[in-house]
Image (cartoon, rainbow, N blue to C red; front, side, top):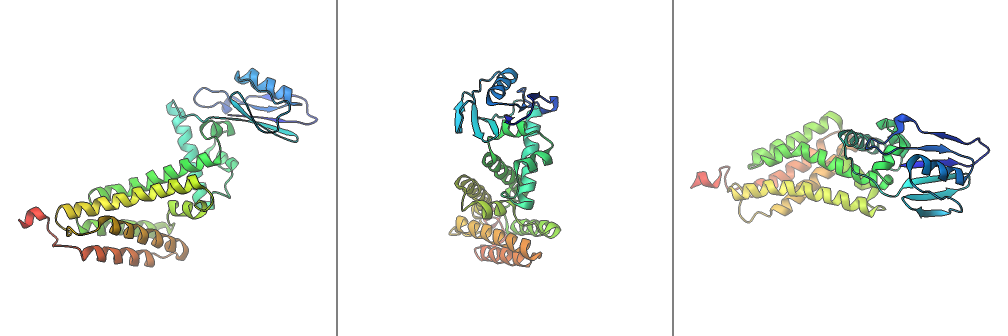
Length: 287
């Protein structure tokens, strides 16, 4: 939630647009005022939250608010973010994250502002700040969103993975998907942009890749357990190789607009896995 005071030669004006109400019942407020005291009074009157801006410099906590003061402008930004408690609130938060994910993927995190997200999601600034304290928090939510979307797309094939034919079917799914859009990988793009300067984002993307590798490893382990692959097969090593071939191939697909490298990388690793095959029959069928 945010209130803004513009300090200047304007008559005091207070606006509270009904469309700018946060979905979980918290009022949103934009304020144009002549001085700090009036802005604080407006916040207290409309939101029931004390806010004393007199003499504020830098970030100073006033109860529930962070007060930021620069010449001619004062901003109040909620110090905490809320999880949605209503279906409408959840839908609004999901819409914000989906819009941010699309913008981050299309034009990058650095080139996407919160006003860009606000416009794309058709929400107010107050709604964004109600659910996300800042852009970093929104970025982490986008990473989570992209992780779940990717794994949801791959999981139906990986859950059923118990033979080399299943692994090749997953390979075909990946290649066919890229041939339709040549878009690369959203997680790979986020990692390339954020890993060097955003520790939280790097760790979140790393955790996402770990989950992806674990899903691949589980399929390889299933093939070991049912006897299609030798017992000495290193499932973790081969899963990491598959993920590396996938990510490198997706990057080259995006840059070259062809899936040739992606196909070559995946086929090479799958051929390596096939060399660990015992026979293309489950152990229970071989007796």
